[in-house]
Amino acid sequence: EIIPYPHPTLRHVSKPIRRVDQELINIIRSMFDAMYEARGIGLAANQVDLPLRFFIVNLEAERGKGDELVFINPVVSHPKGSEESEEGCLSLPGLYGDVVRPKSIRVNAYSLEGKEVTIDATGMLARVIQHELDHLNGVLFIDKLSEAKQASFRDALDEFEVDFNSRRSTGSVPSDEELTARRTDWENRYCR
Image (tube, rainbow, N blue to C red; front, side, top):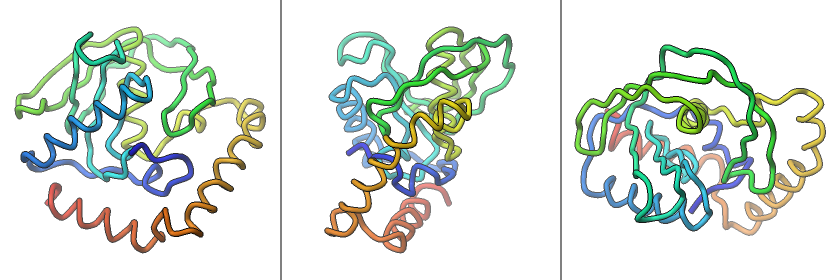
């Protein structure tokens, strides 16, 4: 399930993964299903309430089309150029804003099979990688918008917060303490 803003895990800095097992592989498959259902092209682990340092991408947003990419413990380097383009987020449905990012980057990561991968990315792939890496660092695209644009989102963000707090009051969203304990459990299993 894709968690909505302002869920606390969205602001949690993800920890590097030390091992991949069948459970994690199954979770990643489920993440692709959730991403396609939401018509997304990228999804970070903390968007499904996992404090683990990985994200997935498929620029075609459809199973069977394009490449299903998994980036475990990604590191971005060699930023070049600058370009502004509209972004949205599956955890902030309906909100879009122009974000300035480097035009090209290099990403080093591990694949699901444990192989080291280096990709020189440009265009939409570079943008999606940077957007998802921000998620792993607890940063949302709205944090990168102009103050005026952020102010224009205030009412919508307030609605997200009211809905989240309402769901929390009914028990459908765990307390901060329970969420912290859950994140710690995942980190103990995959990051130590």
